[in-house]
Length: 468
View 1 (cartoon, rainbow, N blue to C red):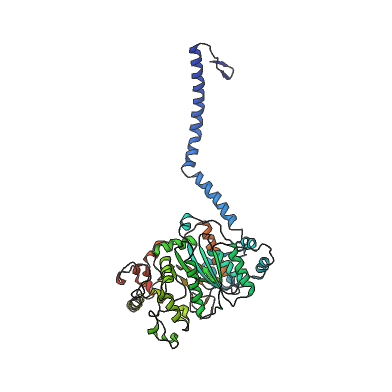
View 2: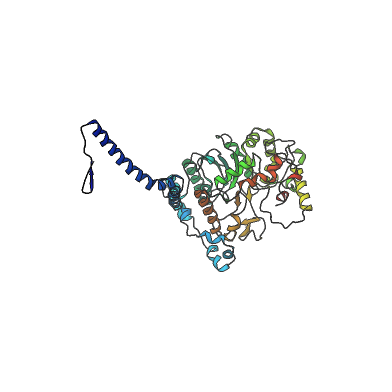
């Protein structure tokens, strides 16, 4: 090997020793270069491999995609900064809140854009977020089913449907016969846009009518003919979700196939001349909203007792508030999966209310989680009362998104709609970002889950939750 100025030149000898020496020099040179590169760059490569730089890059990439996703649809581009509503000092300031309370939203232009479109499905999908693939394997493996009753405000229906929509779920939409021809037509078009949305045109549905529970049951019956799903729940067109689909899935897993139903003492005045003895099972009052496991839904559909109960309820007062509590509150005579003894439940509930010393204790959880509905004008209803229950506004936002319930009832797009849209924006934000802002294991300790599992009332983890 000769040195010529600043360069090394390998002279190849034709002898065996010279050839070997030349190859050894070349190998040594390459090895030295490789070693230098390794020593310089390996720490950087290792750092990325260990999940630092690489993970940060993936997060940055995902964040950019999320930002793009959160700016695509009508809900994303509403001129509303909802973050301020989480600040209690802000919501208590009447001057600052006035902008939110007077903010308005018109559905006219949205309806017009859909009606004027020659490709209505494409227009609906461009305005509202309807995902085409499951967000996670966890959600894909745990599909849900919904029964929805609607009769007016098609745009609000699309906002609500898109807020709970996932391609693996199943949706039955019962449209009241009293709805306009335009509404029925648009609802039918929506069902043609999505394979898992089924629309039924029903007889006229109005408050207190038998057709409310009849249509809900018909939807559940239709959904049991669909492929597997895990839980059924009811919604109205003026509801909004308080949990993302993933959060709901995790809650349902903690419920261990128990039902979630409200139990109240039945007012006999609602019998309207009928005799309780003629009912196949004792009547128990409840809310129309319920969370029903698939096994229970299948059992109900196949049982003659369910059909007998529906026939008995026809002609009674507000029959939709007499169905779920009756079905799931008579386990001794009607052993529906997930049912309990509601008589014992109400006795234990009354006992706890009488004996509880700290009645003013802050109870953040409750036994009934299907729907959050406020019946009085209190600090939990800063909007207004309509038909006896609260229509929420922007002042209710921070309270609503912290509730443990799955659904909030009710919102109107013509009354302080900023509250409604901020709830939808919050759920969408959490859904896209995969944010889970609660401990799902708490739901395993709720009274109905523990009672269904065989735990005695005196041993409940949280007795006060019976009274909330």
